[in-house]
Image 1 (cartoon, rainbow, N blue to C red):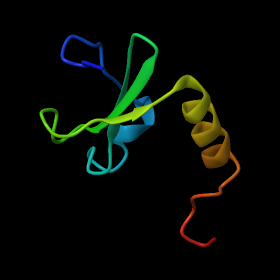
Image 2: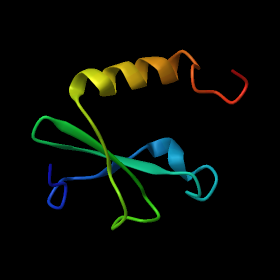
Image 3: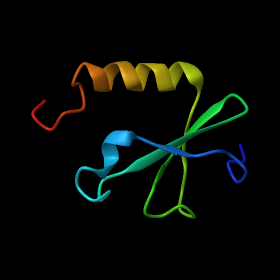
Length: 68
């Protein structure tokens, strides 16, 4: 999927540390893209809607926290 013309969004919470650990999210067609906001021309991780929902649910539950 081509994310070149996608509208990228950054979390409003990402400015707390000067934006040093920020990602941006965009939707293009039926794919969700995630990229490093400091490297907008870099690689884009692509998710299907089902995979994205699973990832977000896991993040909300703390499944990816470093303590696990």
